[in-house]
Length: 353
Figure 1 (cartoon, rainbow, N blue to C red):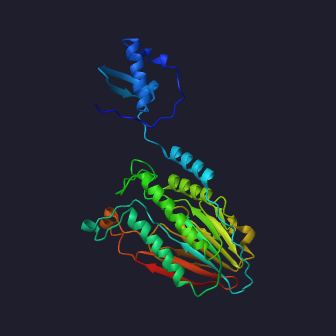
Figure 2 (cartoon, rainbow, N blue to C red):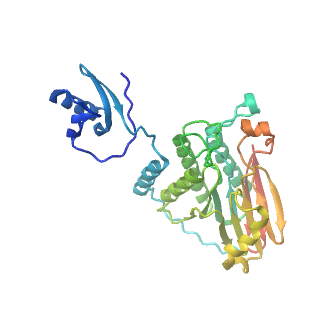
Figure 3 (cartoon, rainbow, N blue to C red):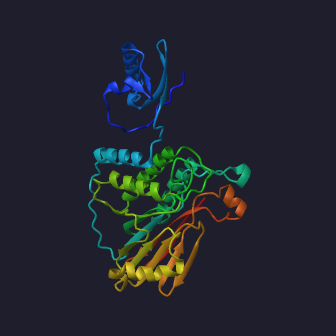
């Protein structure tokens, strides 16, 4: 006998409602109690039973509201758990008077946790485990490459298609089907742990400010992931957040105005003027202006009359569609940058896979 147990959220009702199931009366009080006990033992909401067949001690049930858990349900559960059990981080007291200190911008872009690439078709393997391992390795490599510089602040940019899909149907937010590895909830948890590990590693260097960019593959789930990271570090005084759903974010570091956005929205040539309007309180006081964008999976840097726009590389491999379309073979990498307090961006680092 096969019994399907759905995920439902319903208020309890009196068991007498089972007296009549879709017009079929329960045959006896004994059958009634047997069905009630059977549902309780198997954690089945007996008020949701539409039809049943009873033979001996066994039941075959048809249960209504056959729904998968939604992202909203998962999000509520995860946020509640993290707020209740957020780890206690000891506050690190840091005082820097070094005028040559720098901001370290770490930007693991377009990770696509859950993307599936097979070497048989595209020439390289990529899955959720490889994605997480590459980012952890890449961030550590960037930290080692920047070890000779004094760093007093870290800007970590998250989001930007960190997850490959946005629902249990294995599609992007817009409904485009994807080649995927693993279940959506497994990938969500893997990505969450990846960010926790990265942030804890960066905290050993300097205080961390986290900025979230919404993106086209995971517009909803990416926001929930950022919110869960915010809750995880709620008790950590050395981590600050800007994880709203706003598409373009800005951060001021002394003489630097730094913007970030995924890159699937406003036109690139419009981004400098948008920065002037949306970050007007910092525009005049900052000589050096930069906008980090993503989405295209390759490196490009262009100046727009005083505002530099930098497109980030991705650590992810091309999937079948991108290989067929020719969107492939760009170096796979995680990148970071150093911004001097006075002189602006003075170095860039690239960890290539």
